[in-house]
Image (tube, rainbow, N blue to C red; front, side, top):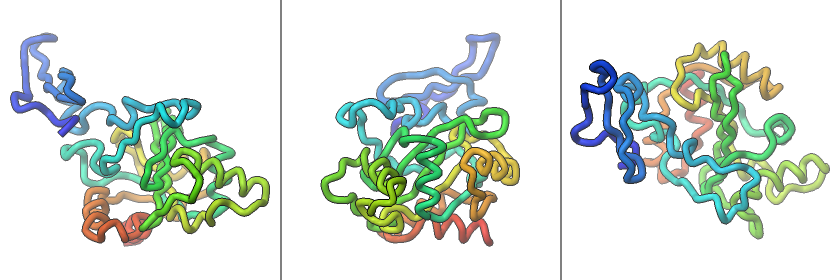
Length: 230
């Protein structure tokens, strides 16, 4: 699997005896410090191959691997996160504060990457689709959010009500940085202008596994908020 350490993973010698790990990503062999790979395997492919929001849709490849596994199996199980339930006001705030998503997925997910965290930590803002998401007719995958936000800003009817597209928004450290939930909550509220409905730590792997077992019919946002309230 791309992004996983090779079989002969540890090499010593270069760099005054530093321990490094060989990582294979998209058939390329990379050598990175072992202290990096113990927690995560370098920037996920989503971010390493990130396309500009202004790039033509045809030039932006789909990336469909599970969002909760993008850091590899060595990532810490509990992740600090903040969650908002969907509303038209939330969509308008995202468009007004952040602009168009940097990436969009055929399953309806919308992603922004911004240095909004404490000390400039990169935050991934991910708009989670509803279970059984269906893209509005006559819209390209990359146009769904923009078209919806534009219609709301003009007080017109969007292609679909936002509740029929997305369940809510999640914000978490994009590259596994350790953050206190309260600090993350304050930073994201300042960036978005809307306080989160819940902040704390969640088990992304467990939520992702349960979502797959439900044949992708469960609400990711409900699962996130359930863990946060528990």
